[in-house]
Length: 215
Image (tube, rainbow, N blue to C red; front, top):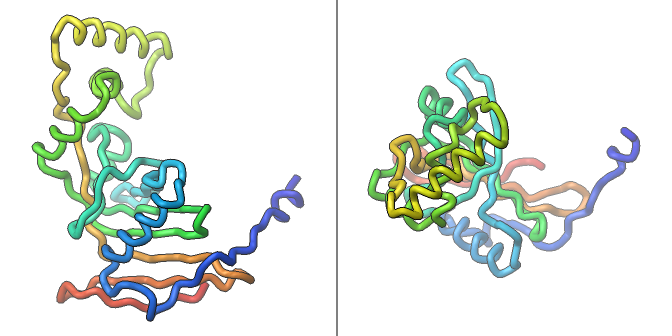
C-alpha cells in the first residue's frame, strides 16, 4: 500500500509565475488569481485551510470558507467559543492556505487576527439561510455532545420557535475574524517540481517586498 501511495504524482505545466508578471501589491495579485479561479468554475474556490496554534505552540488546522477580502485582509466567520476561536483568543495569529488544483496554484497567507465589527458580523449573519442561523445558536461547536439525536432535537425546537416568529438573532459568541496579512506566498506548479514561489513580505514601513523562494 505504501508503494502505491508513494507513486502518486502529477506533473504541473499549465502556467508560470514570474517577477515581471505579478502585481507589486499582493492583494491585487490575489484578486487577479481569485477572479481566474472563479472563471475556472472551481468548486468552492473560497475553501481554505485555517491553521491556528495555542499559546504553547499546539497547532490545529481545518477547512473554513472565505467570506470576503479587501486591502485590509481576509474574512471568515465562526463560533468564537470553538476550538479555533479559543486558540485565536490566546494567540491571535493564523495561516490560511488556498489550493486551486485545477489551476495548479496555491496561496499561503500568514498574519495577525482580530474580530470584525459587530455590524459586519450582523450583516453577514442575517444574510445566511435561516437553518444556518439556527445552527449557529444551538450548536456548542467543538464541545462533546451526547448524540446526533440531541443535536437534531435542539435544532427542531429552535426551528419551531422561529416559525412562530421568534427571531434567533445573532448569538454573541458567533461572528467574524479578519486575517491581516504580513506574508503572502503565491505558488504555481511547474514541470519537474521546479515550482514558482513568489513571497511578499510586509516591511516595518508598510511596504510590500517580493522575492523568489526555491521550490
